[in-house]
Amino acid sequence: MQPIHEVISSSRTKDMYLSIRKQGTVSKQTLLEESGLTVSTLTRILDELLAQGLLSEVGYGESTGGRRPTLYETNPLFGYVFGLEISRTHSKLALMNLHLSLLDEYTWTMDEHTTPELLVEAVHSQALRMLEQASVDISQVIGLGIGAVGPLDRKEGIIQHPAGFTAPGWSQVHIKEQLEQLLDVPVCLDNGANTALLGEYWAGGNLRLHQLLYLHAGIGLRSAIMNEGRILYSVIDTEGAAGQMIIENAGIPSRHPGGNDGAWESYVSIRTLEMQARAEWKLGKDTLLRELAPNPESIDFSHLIEALQAGDPMVTGIFGRAAVYCGIGLANLINILHPEEVILGGPLFSAADYFYQEATRVALEKTYYREQCSVRFTKGALSDNAVATGAGALILNQLTG
Image (cartoon, rainbow, N blue to C red; front, top):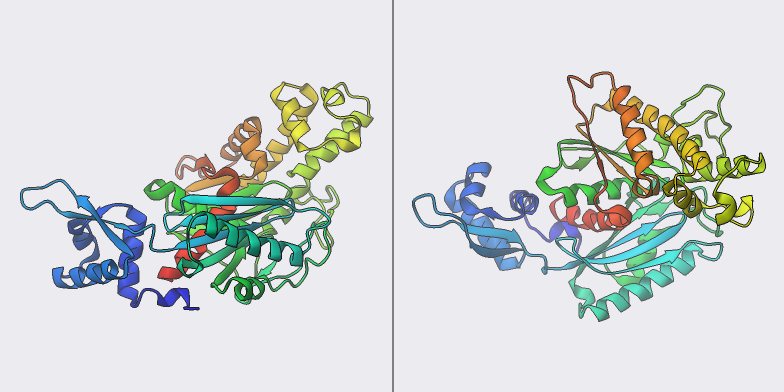
């Protein structure tokens, strides 16, 4: 099993491959101007990448007076990558080429029966099925990336002690080692917010700005930061730390051991919205939910979205209050981190446009330097595929790391 970082021989060649990957299709003349290399050195590097099959010549650009320049792209069929998302509600395996184009995918519901052992075996069998279906040999797979709920030990590839899994056993799971043994391909692990941001970054291409903040709003709040295409890491895995930002002193007690009272995610999460809707039902409030769910305890997020889209006043109020708290927390992060672009992903943003609009309005209103430093808000382009796609991008990053 060849280490991924050894596939491309030198740092200079890696830099050239990454430059072409970022630009999509680029001429030799542009590469010459941007790199500052001599013609002979650039030609040698390009010939090396072509000989390995990592690069393809894809035609000629427009002439500026002389010969038409050769155009280059990274070769999407040089190899394949798997991206695996592991969350509290579902897990997803995706097979992609090196342009992160989706070839196949499979999703599991994470219920009380989905132990780590069961999921690892299921991932193994589905990966082999996908390869057979796509007529791809396992030797063509460069690696498998995982975006998982933290906290994690990224270096050792261990899911440490995440909260919220309904099945037993989700503590100190050596997921990297287990999947490497079964599939005999390199495996990389990172938290889901980081991989989602990686996926969105590559999906956005050259349209993405330099300093990015990503926020995922779903069962909880998860965040990631990127600068110049690189994820910023702290000493420990802190994916869920943003959710513990205190929004109200002595506010709602935390549902998690060791969590802060008045924490941001106690006001902005799917579980919070469901709990508030159940409480309103029990108080006798008039709501469409009484037609959609048989009793208050059966209310789930899908009911809330249906009622919101129908204009139910009670549900609209619940989402509106959560959106205000979401915007306040976003403004706090923006005032500290000063990102150029904030990418908002997860079911709260993707399924509820009203929530997205209200949260971004409040965030802009409370951003201190909004006149001098304009912030761009975008919804994630990859929606539910962001984590798994970005997990595949983890492997591609190893090629040039």
